[in-house]
Length: 600
Image 1 (cartoon, rainbow, N blue to C red):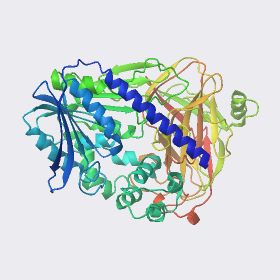
Image 2: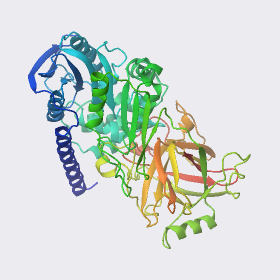
Image 3: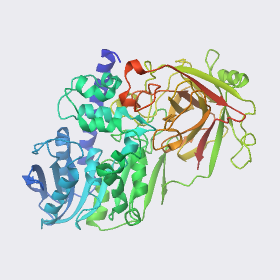
């Protein structure tokens, strides 16, 4: 990224943040709950934690009622001070008390800022203090992102006055948030470490993410070691001790112990989506019986993250939804049945169900075909000067005895590309971005076919009828390479009749962690293997007349760490250790590479 591009990206992000603040102020001014009170008091308490460290705690109280339902927040981002004040004053006018505590080492609280480590103990200390407050009738906890984490981390041990939590854009399955098949989600956690190291880091983020070996970037570019970041990037196995003992294991197990209803909200293009869905599915039956899961086409800031799609029915409920939830549970004391709300992109429609995942009617198979005839037909669909790797052919269903009977091409064909880790493909439209989500995240127009020699594109014929899917898309490929380990990335797109292509979903895998392996395995160069690229959930309507396009490559930076084509943890690979890999994709016959769509 050039300096001019960096300035433009920063400008766009600042403008979006300004718009978000203005939008939020207006929403809370117009919050559709009756105004019943004025502010009676505001106080700051330096509340001692269990180890004596004093944490700055702000309490706003209404005149009426004297004993009030109370909304509680724990925050680590001082830049949100003004935002939280706006929320607090709006809730007080509606008869709620409002409490904000600043995590240790932030916002005026004593102690050292260490992410995650103290939040359970400090949060429960605050809960005991508020439980004993005679002016608090009941409590609801509220937070998004790290502020949601501060709720999740203690949700299994809260006192009786805590009746519910409203937690957005976060989940308790930390490994899912951090990794996909051995590759780190850098635009989430490398970016977060860069910005939340407890000191100002001037080094460029993208240059930091590209540094090799990544395990040394803290000392080389950030001014000193960050042990917690080094732990994140070196523990790649899902079943290793780091993720399965101690803190992260405790966090993973908390949802199954929760007894209160939880409102879980996330976006189809939020980087915590996979973890949030896994967390909701882990909720205890007692909690889930009255909980809500809501998934919309948002990014991490609840901004619409789709383009070239109607969104007339996409209401902005980031202010009203929590307010109505707390009014229902804390004031009216009403507990409804489990509810799942999912937004169908392309149909501009909210669907309501009573469980998750949504039942799949059919797994529709779309087969890859790399034969010369398929390439020529696909090239016609792209345009006379376009390069196509092959076509996509609709199967005949999943009940036939053989893949060929299902509609797979009978002729074996292959295609391939050369992957150089020193020249990765840059993310453009993605579901797992944070730092660059303002410019590259969400569903966005895609580059033309042939824009890089190391990106293979397959194209279908126009779709005859609308097709709706809700769930996890899987791309099954048969591949080989000439190195001991490498990565394959797949991105599925809808191509509209005017030629515009927008990404639906994408994901990556490695040969070492292929097919859901929880620890690193081996691969023999030249061996043909099946790999499954299972993507995060999405609800999407493919419109009649559109085409499907599947791109296959081996990198998507900075959404994922760049694979060096060598074995071992990605973070330990040096520049001089990287290798060039020659990748081959097989289609047809005994190698029925296929896209599997969850049709509802």
